[in-house]
Image 1 (cartoon, rainbow, N blue to C red):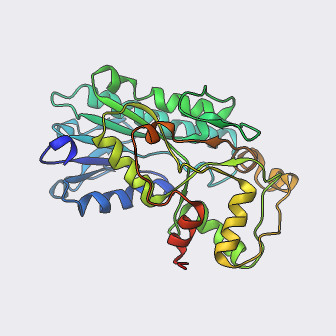
Image 2: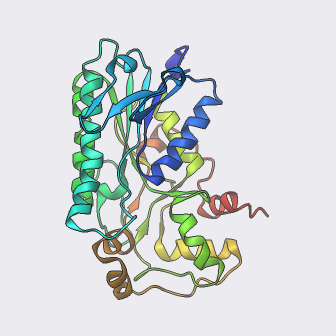
Length: 311
């Protein structure tokens, strides 16, 4: 139970594939832990299962079914890497994060029996592009550009809940390592064929976390007296080149086929530049101060675990 409570009722709002992966794992993780797990759904809700209805067009939630929850976990947003960024796509990425978060925070703020904590996803995109080996943490200022601006709006969208006295945690999630989906699943085919390698200079930072550790972080911040931004990353960020070399080593395949920056720009446009060529070495200072224990702090161990490559 969270903070000694008999029931931990969790609401997960998930829209994009990466969040569905994390949300599905989160639901299973908490359900097997004996918690009362509910899910916000678009359209008709299965009340017998405990679902909470969300009318996306009207921007309203079934507030009555949100009464008396202990915690709300909100993972939502259109996938930023699903397609090239047109002006319309960039607006969709922004709106799919900021609007539902604002609506949910306002709904929770107006409840008679408010949850004790709202855990809302954000991203390490907050820090923008930080060339060089220097590390950043939760005390670092916001970066410049589209993604940092989106992350700032996303985090500010929780203000109504915070102002109402609800403890709010903005979890800045790094690249999630899981063989079931996300970045690793997309990288496996070329790397297995020996066609993997670094992207661009290969020196850009990659801040990552294994899916199991991400679930641990979400559970940890629900039960720990922490609020504000928390970096959900492993304690050992790496360069893009190191990421590729480590994956190749675990697979027993060469990783010497680089993808030039010019090719990234031609194939993926602005989306590729921001997601593949930019980066930052983000450290989990707040989790470390709270003595959070990672199950897989090493990238090599995370890859071996996810791919079943045990020594």
